[in-house]
Image (cartoon, rainbow, N blue to C red; front, side, top):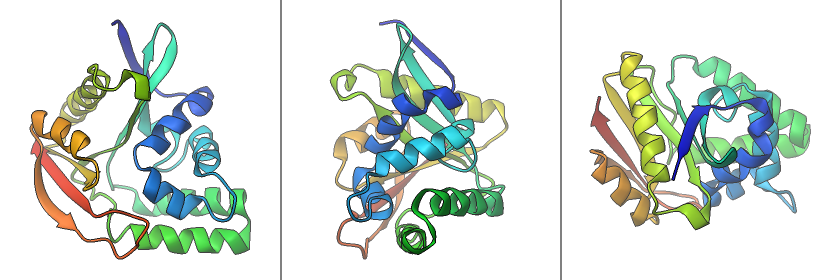
Length: 201
């Protein structure tokens, strides 16, 4: 299988947003799917916008024969105010002030289980691969690419969070040298417990 990994672009939003969603559907649905709305619609809009943790600027995509089959992000917490303002703007623009306020509240609750990164870490997130291609090495290649890029930028450690309900993903990260450093209990019934994993770069 010939794969190409490249920086994401705004026009990848339609293909990448469902893959980003697959990285944490329970949390995304809890935060971004009030009423009959779909979390993927918000993620697509935020991805195309480019700013913040969900924007295309933090992501890479994996292509096979010119088709996007995987997506993932690598970023740090060096600009928390910028990310927070971008998220608030995207949420309020997409949902309006009343529904948007509820989305923001739910997002802050999820941050107690999946906290934002600090500025000294490469945070690996939003890793998604098309279901029919999982287990074929696409996810591994994408994570390795993000780790290599992070090491080249001078990061000393990489960090990610994995759902306790996703042992397959945890096993992949363990094969890549990550170890569990903490488990956070969720106080939100719809969102599973999460484990923080780290490795040196």
